[in-house]
Image (cartoon, rainbow, N blue to C red; front, side, top):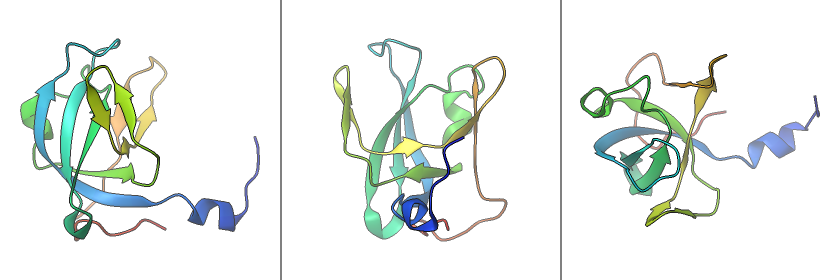
Length: 111
């Protein structure tokens, strides 16, 4: 495993957000949802997330998530994904979302 310095880690801007809208994303190559996420003062950002096996859209709305907010935007089919939602990749390849264990202010940075 490649070791990085704390300075390297500090370059990754991970923030708390709340999912406010979810849509199916049939044009994505792999099954995914379109997510709109509220990051407080950072505003609302969009993300494409391949989490359709473990989550239903109605169970994602109002869920707190963690996301990398300083990657460049990426076009996925006809959708611009602005943030990378973080999760744990399970043995079967599915992704379980990472979230704070209590309500915290939206947009707070993870260190």
